[in-house]
Every structure is written in C-alpha cells, then in structure tokens.
Image (cartoon, rainbow over all chains, first blue to last red; front, side, top):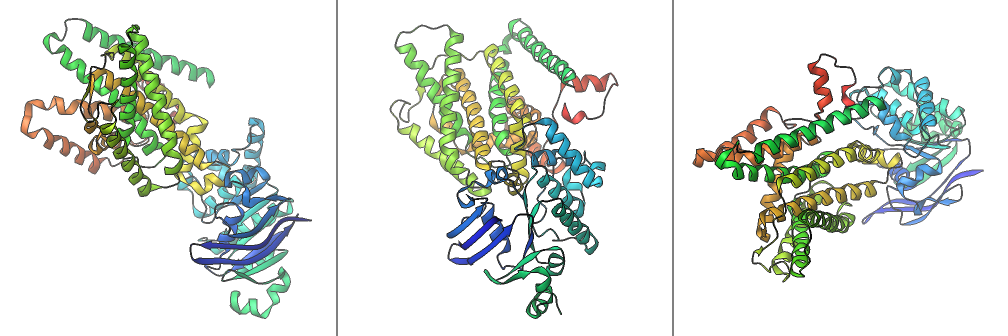
Length: 236
Length: 333
C-alpha cells in the first residue's frame, strides 16, 4: 500500500528550477532512501513534503491527504515526524524539555511520560543528561535527541534528513543502527542521505537524485551493485 | 510541588503588597518634605517604563526578534485612551477617577493589541533585520498619522487630558502587568515561543504553528505597551507625536538590553535604573549624559548578557538562600 506518494513534483526558488518532475513513493513498512550529491535537491524535496517549501506543481499525498495544502505545523498530526538536517535541537532547553516539545500535539500527560521513558530506554545516554541543556550535548547525542524528539509524537512515518552529517564514522554506524531498529519496530522511514553506502545497506528501496531529477531507482541491494552508482557514489 | 509553588506565589504577593505600603509610607507622610512630588514623579515614570520595557522584552528577549518601533505602540495606547477619556469628560459624563482610569487602560491596551495583530500578521513573516526595519517604519507611520489627525491635535500638543495616574493606581497596574507577562512567559505559550526563538525549523517540525505564536506574542506585547501608553498619557496630561520618535524606542531597547534580554527581573531593574539615573545625575549637569553612556558601555563590556542575563528574581528563592535551605532545581522558581 502506498503511504506517501509524490508525483510530477516541481519546485523553484525564484528563477532557479530546483526539482524537475520528481515521482517517488514509499509503501507502508518500508525503509526508502533518497541519495544524491550535495545540491541535488534532497532537502528541498523533504522540505516540500513537510510544507517548509512551496511546490510549483505536482502533488504530495500522505494516506490520501494532500500535503501541499497542509500547514508545516499540522503535518505532525497526520503521523509524519521530521528529523531536520543538522540536528535541530532547542539548544537552551534541557533534554527533557526538548522531548516534551516533541510531544507538543499530545495532550495526555501520562502518555507523554510513558513515551519519554521509551526514549530513555532506547537512548540511555539521554537519560543520564536529562537536565542538561541540549546545546551542550555532543553531536551524536544531539542526533539521538533529535530522533527521540521525533519519536515522541509516535509517528507512523519518519523523515530523516542527513542523519550522518558531521558525525564520526562510529557515530554514523550507531545512528544507522538506530534507524534500522526504529524501522524494525514498524515505523515507515524515508531517509535522505549523502552517505550512499550506509543508506543503501539498510534500505529496502532507494532513489538516486541528480540535479533535481530522479536518475535511478530500484531495490537497494541492486543499486549497491549497479556500476553507475558505484562509480558516482561509492567511489569504486 | 504545586503546594510549594502556591506558597511561593503567596510570598511573592506579600512582597508586592509590602512594597506598596512602603511607597505609601514614603509618599503619604512628610518624610520627603519638599522633594516629595519630584521623587514621586520619577517613580511613576519608572513604573510606566517598567511595563513598557517588560513588554518589549517579550519580543526581544523571549521571541528573539528586534522591535525598534515600540514607542509607536505606546503612542497608540496614549492617544486612543486620551481621546476616549477627553470625549467622556466633554460629554459631561462624570465618572469616578478609578473607573475612568480603568477605562483608559483597557481602551489603550485593546486598541494597541488590535494594531499589534494588524502589523504582526504581515510583518512577522519576516525575521531579524527585516522585521526590525518594518517596525521602525510602522512607528514612523503612526507618528506621522498622529501629526495629521484632527482628533489627536493635528501636530499641536494634545492637552487637557485628565490627570488620573496617581502612584497607587500605576503601582497596581504595573504589578499586575508584570505578573501577567511573567505567567505568559512561563506558560505553555511561553515555552513554544522560546522553542521558536531557538530553532524555528525544529519548532515547526514538532507541530508548533510558528506564525501563530509570533503574532500572539507580538499582540500581548502591544497590549501592554498600550497600557503603558495610557498610563503615560494620564500622568503627563499632554501629548505630542514627536515624543514617540525612534529615539524613544531606542531608549526602551537600551533598558531591555541593560537589564538582560530574557529576564523580566532585568527589565524591571533596567527600566527603574535608567529612568532614575538621569535624574540622580542632575547635579553633575554637563557630565550627565557622559556618565549615562559610560555606564552602558561598561555593562556591555563586562556583562554582555545584561545585568541579569536570564535570571529571574524570586522572593521565596532569596529567603531560602538566606535561611540556608536552598534546594536543588532553583531554576523553576
């Protein structure tokens, strides 16, 4: 079943046509990644999905609801959570306050407390630092917090924007393990990544974006073997 | 925790009442002799500034945006309330001072808040410098409009406004205003506003409607600027549009920054100190403005976050420290 469907999407920044006729879909329970080089338009696509960018034409549909007509702040209520690029945490709030902000749309206090416990269970490191200002955490911890905050809304689909950005290789592996785990627990994931090898190794399917167009798509394991992908993104 | 918090509130309230009686003791007895009305005037102006500066701090400190036209909001409150009370008097309706004063405050606040919504909705799509420029432009438009409206004196001084702001009333309104703004900042709303200041993309991803909260805060801020303006008009009793120029806005911004952006305590102290300082330095005549500027420069060099940073004063907290019962987690007090 198609959960998220993007068709004929075009996005422009003024005179610059950034995204050309992009079509892609994410099925329920899948882990799909969108890979591409710097400036290919990956984040633009993600921001268009979440309403931070406006599309010129095309459609983005989540469970039959048109996302292009939905406010950025209402998207989370449809079960879609977004982990923004570059670990956007609230630096002067404590870890716990950050998590509480993630449950902004949840009204029941017990449910919030329960989910905070879940996040702490998943990331024990965050529990150790729950009273610390988020800005003082290390890069890896901030990424954990950003993921934890997104999970606070109990999303059915999670959008991840470049989770590996600026992290050391060991931390990148940790973060990808977390993504895999989240996915195994039944959350659909759309992962946007530059690190093609890592992304392809955990994904079911993938799309390759080049200068605003989808140039290739298919099963992740096939793409890993594809000569063109290997040349362009895996350095082989 | 809720019970302890209740006790804290009661202690703070008691502090406010004690201060009120202290003021009454000072001003209603012969303690000060001849300078009484002079000192009283400074105190009233300081209290009016306190409301103004706290309201500006909501925008600058808690929302993290610059408003360089806050005097414009103040003038709307001042003129609108003055026009209404003068009209009531001219119509021969005799109301008790207190009632008339409350009408003035409410009218000033509400009309300014409405203007806040009107300006806020288009302006708050902008951020940072751009927003600052728009607020300057807005204040200038208001000033020019008041210079040309017949009803506001048309460039001449609007005089004959009833003198209603005595220090009892002003004190109570100031205390209530600061208290309400404090509660706003500490509420769920306040936390969302802080989240937006810290990272608007993350805030929006968490489901916070960024524009809504910004316009809301702008409106609350405008409301209290209007209240402050109403008190000002009914203390000074005559208004001239040129008073509410860019310089006046900048003066309030200085007070916010001196006290500490993000601390209402800082705003109270900043407003009180900078309102009183020029008067206190009057005997130095020529060096007055020099000392004033040197104080500002020194504070900015040695304490760039302002006198209080983001610290909030709380009477129970101080009592606890004094009696050596300081508990952890003092941040919430």
